[in-house]
Amino acid sequence: MPRINEKTTVRVAPFGMDFVFSIYYLAAPLLLIDLKANPVQLGLVGTLASAVHMGMAHLMGGLSDRLGRRRLIIAAPLIFCTTSLLMTQVREVWVILAFSVANGLCLAIYWPSLQAWIADRRVGTGLARDIGDFNLSWTAATLAGPILAGSLYGLYAGLPFFVAAAIALMLFLLVFATVHEREFASPEKAELTDIETQHRRRSFLYAAWVANFASWFILANARYQFPKLARELNLPPHLIGLLIGFLGFALFSGFFLLRRTDRWHFRRNFLLGAQGLALMGVLLIAVSSRPALFAFAFVMIGFCCSVTYYSSLYYSVRLLKKKGRGSGLHESILGGGAVLGPLLGGVAAHYTGLRAPYVLCLAVLVVVLGVELIFIRKQTRSKTL
Image (tube, rainbow, N blue to C red; front, side, top):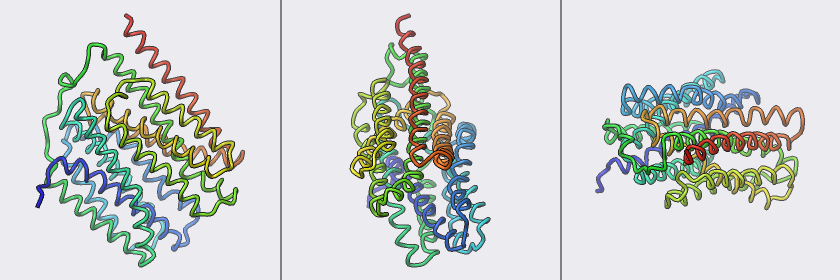
């Protein structure tokens, strides 16, 4: 029997947590529908969790710097296991919404701590590969979880929650056995060159943060606002699901390719070029009505998100001495985009039209690209001094 070690945890722990959340956040809305919840309550089940995650991630990341990673990493699966088991007995809408708040806290506890723990293990190229494994793992879970959840709920409404609780318990046992406190990797040991001055590196970090915010602003609009537009265009549900699936496919493929090379590290052309793809993708959704063009647009948006997410996380945990704080800021910033995107996009669609969210995304992306260019010009100026 193969021995379970830290490398296994790097690859399995992200999959486990995102897998149980993917199950939960399809099964919970289905249960709310059975309980006659209204559309606002259906929206709140995801929004509350995302808002708490966004607001608390940077605080929990800083807490992991002070208390250590292990305590927080092992606490999160237990919290989720408890809420999942309780969901099998819930018959009140407000209780489900309260559990969404608890699950958002669970996300804020788990992800920054796990990301910082991964960063504590390695530096330089080895760190980039481990982050690549992490990214591939959680992305695969988001593709598989909803498929299983839908099938289980069709058999018995409580079954997805029992399965999610069981997987969360197994995840707890895995991290309890393999996650231990480590001496934090010193930034001075990282594989840096003389060209990569502190000012230059921070410029890349700030540019990656704002790029990641815009990417997840766009991604969330594509996920949550596009189905309404597609139905107005008389696209069948199975085709809508397939089109949105291209987002996950492109995200996974992008992570796979980026993991295999370090040529994109601290290269502005990769970061800006990826956002150029997203700009074209959003423009296609705004003006097109053809499914093939929508699929092409989602591939470009998904690939952009892979570049900005990888860059934001990698630079955060590589360049900041307090890696928990860095990973927490990374999570909070992308969470801000994921919350504000569909919220503002929904308001724009309601008052202006179903194409308006993508015009809004274009505007946000143009502003963000301007901000990034300011950071990158500062970096270029520092190299010439």
